Length: 367
Image (tube, rainbow, N blue to C red; front, top):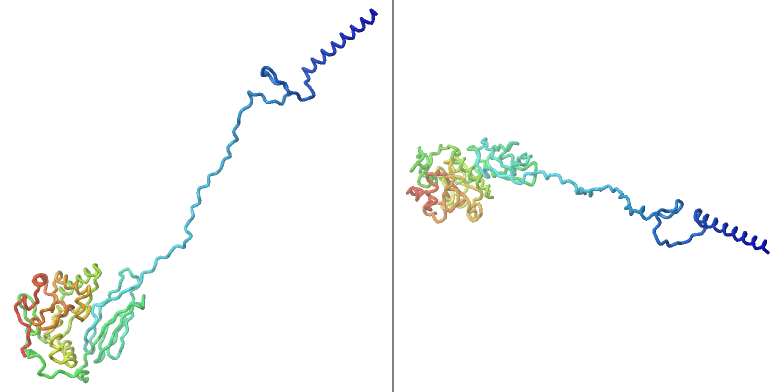
């Protein structure tokens, strides 16, 4: 019995020892099962094989920024095709004269002005409507061939739609039959062959029905008058006013032929109201010019009004103004200007006089 008690005690001690070793081994090797222990204090050191992440090692890491290349916005170039500059083309032609008279064999070349000034091609093409009456070369030099009338046309080679025309009258030669009936000798001015010198009054050359020019007086265009005329044209153009010479210098023979044509058509009495007898025309003096249009309606146009209001600034006067017909001896001609110079034109204009009133003279034929 005593022996059994001893064996039992030994067995208990042995078992106790085994349990203690097992307990210590459990603390060193860990368990085979996943258990959750809630410790009363945070462990100071995590087990070596623990997969737990220590709290002091956890840092919130931001993802590395991905570098993105900034692409500038694409500049969209205009897809519209580049417009080529429109070529400058001639759009207008003006002439220094639009009607004149020639003797057979005589030549005259009108001055051509094409616009705009910067048009690169200002080529001219000249043509005569009747080469048996008058011919024209490539430069615009018109030559009388035989008595008659024709029209000479100049066209822009750059723009064939732009052209200008000049009426040409060629006087028949003495040996050719006259194309018009001549005026009887008694209708010719009494002064024919009697006037030997031009008449000046107050420094002004006078040409009217009372005062005639010698038949051989043919000075051509007065240089001062021409310069003033072109300056007036240029200044008018700056204001949008287009002026040009329709009829300029005429010789005694030119005027005689023209006057006879009008007498045959309208009779002497009526012709004397609008056409001068030979020797009595201001066109022979080289100081008178017909501009733009031979119509009284010209006075109501912008050009006619500008001319009446401004020509005195250049030494010109409207030679045959309205309301002065019984003094000048001619109908109202808003297109006819006469150069008298800057000493006289502004005064005549300001006082509203015609040249006869200004000089205190008459204008009447002596027959």
